[in-house]
Length: 108
Image (cartoon, rainbow, N blue to C red):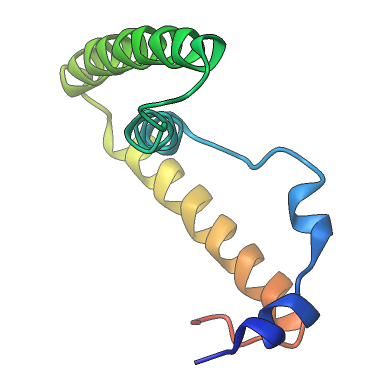
């Protein structure tokens, strides 16, 4: 297990210089975590922001559920499914090649 000193010496600030890429699920999870860990004695502005975030999360969950319900009713043809599968395979292959070029094993 790394020591605190190791973590400080190996800290890469560039990871925090840009916003992370989020999908709807990770955005909702992040918002829920922020609300959960918001201090009870936070400033009123922070509490107001958390209240707004909570409303935004609820709206996102509702919209996502509606979209998933619509998608569940969509029937894809075998050719469409094959095209999606091929696209996914190419994406994973590209990710594996990229990681390999970075000197890291693609599986982990």
